[in-house]
Length: 169
Image 1 (tube, rainbow, N blue to C red):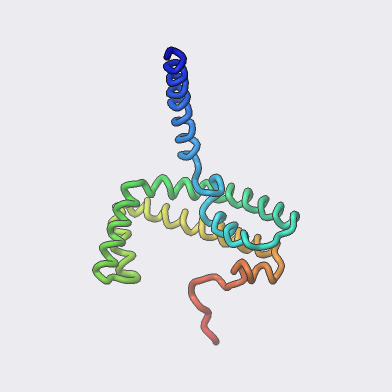
Image 2 (cartoon, rainbow, N blue to C red; image 1 turned 60 degrees about the vertical axis):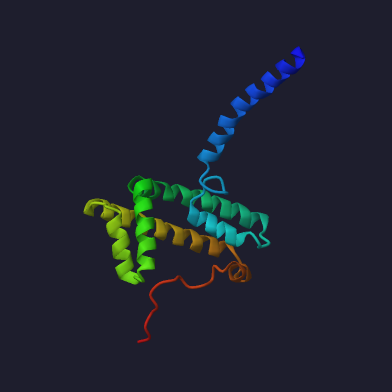
């Protein structure tokens, strides 16, 4: 009986030590790629089904590391301005706008107003988000240069960027 009590105490002690360690590991991860920004992870996900050479894999890994470093500062700015409260308020405003049938600029205005950010903070947020988008586009273009034409097509990286269409002159 004494042996059982000692063994049970050891198991409980091990569990008490292991749970915070596992929780800390999970808390630190940003996504499945171990912390890669979402834009980089999205491109990497598109590449999963491709048969890449070892050289291509190495180049893409190096590009991901380089571009993740470039994204760090603007992402910190976004994270500091988009607190949990601001995100929650914007989400609720977005849901409300959809329920009311608002679309486009009207819906965006309602969501932006819900964030309660000062004009200066809005400008900082917009600038940081634009910088992140530019860096993400650069990463996608750089990865596209590493791939063959067939690989680009399979991954969907050869499609033109979404946005305004050029008018025929």
